Amino acid sequence: MSLYLGIDTSNYTTSAALYDSRTGRAVQQKKLLPVKEGQLGLRQSDAVFHHTSQLSGLFSELVSNIDFDNIAAIGVSTCPRPVEGSYMPCFSVGENTAKILSAALKIPLAELSHQEGHIAAALYSAGREDLFDKDFIAFHVSGGTTEAVIAHGRGDGFSTELVGSSLDLHAGQAIDRVGLMLGLKFPCGAELEKLALKNTEKNTVHPVLKGCNCCLSGLENLCKRMVDNGETKEKTAAFCLKYIEKSIDLMTERLIEAHGKMPVLYAGGVMSNSIIRRSLEEKYNAVFAEPQYSTDNAVGIAYLAGRKFKNVQT
Image 1 (cartoon, rainbow, N blue to C red):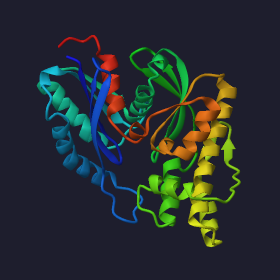
Image 2 (image 1 turned 30 degrees about the vertical axis):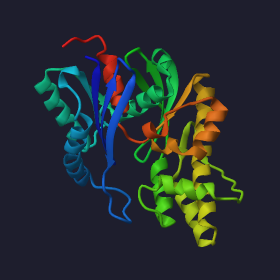
Image 3 (image 1 turned 45 degrees about the horizontal axis):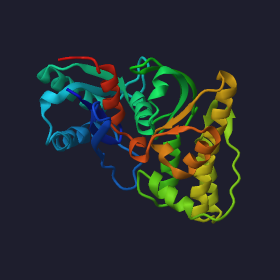
Image 4 (image 1 turned 45 degrees about the vertical axis):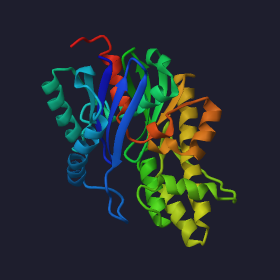
């Protein structure tokens, strides 16, 4: 038995994946939750409803040609971050589904966090399994989280220690707010990047940091001022992304100064942005997930289940 099932029902994506430990390959099915035009997100009750509606269909597609006797274990994200008290109702949909499957198939279950899944997906897609035996700095930058942790590899997984974060707005939230300001559709990351790549004007940014933490709430006001002053959408989009990129860059510099030089990994939907990635990848020789594994997905969860239960016989 070499297949490991992963389930992740995050705030904006329903996702299921299978990792094959024999071939090292992963396949996934995922679908964004529907958000009404002009809105910045979903209430948790709506997210739970949409996950419940979407998960069964995605799961059916994923396992349509699979012999269930080949599934050795299941992994599921049950909370946003691997800390006590971390909770979000939408993860209960995946958690309950995974527990039912585990009991029905009589196979073990790994309860993990969404953040661990993001980091593991980056390690998997970048081919950096070696970091499971090392300490490294890991950034998780998305619509719901802007954090940096020291990840302590322990072979089959890692523990995390929070060392930096946004003190107010998350990077993904800032991108979506600026994107809606510019008339884009939520989630705005991909369209904002397209606009920014068309910009030919120079932008100068001065991010606000407090120690190893960043502050991003002022970015929305700065971009609104640019719009009010008649700046182009392209320049405003580029300013927004450059501000976030420079904030993360400065956080990385300070974390390395504080904790010593070690590998750096960037995960989360915001880090799939080519403008941000190019700068940080060159400067720090950093580890990034491939774009399809940067945004919310269950591949990292399935991969972690495979590492955790690789010697389990059921």
